[in-house]
Image (cartoon, rainbow, N blue to C red; front, side):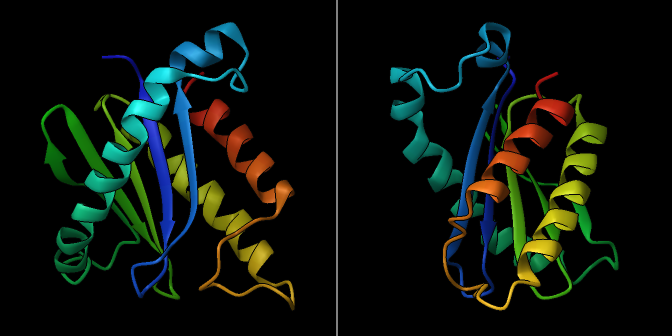
Length: 149
């Protein structure tokens, strides 16, 4: 397994509002800005698997009072973990390593904190794509800290 993670924030009406990818191989070389052909090949597959897991997420979220839902779905070697906010926003993590459950949980909690801070902005619309560079930068830092370190 390579240690690849795909993260998405999805609104209650199933609209993706934010996406990020993390890869252990990229963190070793320190350049996530280099064009990666393999990343482009699989980005649509990652989106498809994550979006397909939304139905399972909708079923599982009513069975537990917890915001963190752990692994809710599996597709071949990929697992899907999820986190639900109080406002109904869904954080989806597609990952190929099952051993980093604690890191994924911490990542979700930290992203939830910065999401809440971002949503306090008067001009923030939770149904629109998140295009704030500071939010993206903080998510990337949290990904390095909890997922690919």
